[in-house]
Image (cartoon, rainbow, N blue to C red):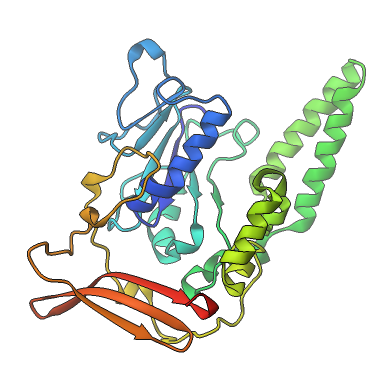
Length: 324
């Protein structure tokens, strides 16, 4: 939607900067959509580029992608409390969605998509208004199960009706031009737009469906290098009902963990890895204690520091099962 405002939500700015968005921007480049020509990041475009302006323009453009048609996408991190406060948005995208907090989505972002829009009040022209799209591999923890609940809200009859009408529209467009075909095509297009506005589509696909791009060697390598449980979840997208070697059933990431990242050192959404320089909980003048846990199924290495009355785990490594 030209001049609209959308949000790309991530669990952390570190994830957005280092993994998710760099891959997405590479895909845009492959389709011929070039940075600093068709979109800019973190600043207003040069007036000579002729970009349209969005209806809503934040005062801080540091984490904003501005496209040539005036659409902007604001990068929001769930690690920042009330990071989407006061926003009015028209659409929402979330990648690696199994790591997102549904509580924060429902309390902060979903309400920002409510109400009416004076600029996009025609559902036929703008069927994707208030739309959202979440992408993820298969959730295996209770924090990510919320994503699978959307399956029960999918109206398969509505989706099938959209497919049938789309096929009818394609056949009409292939016929010789006539007033009847133009009228029928216009009517079908209007119906399709209204149906799309009400449609929720839920689908589970495996990496095998994408083998034309990934190649069979990738699947073979993942089967060799990943544990069976991880291969089933990440590659075959199978629901894991029982995780081998699980413990701490009441563990909650939101209650028992914290975020300590220096986002100022993140580098402009270019694909790279980041080291401990981003860790604000690391005291560089204090020693680091390293401990091992030779569990029957999982072997851990934990690096920690004593800071006052707190024992902070600043980094952990593990390997599982037959990979130990």
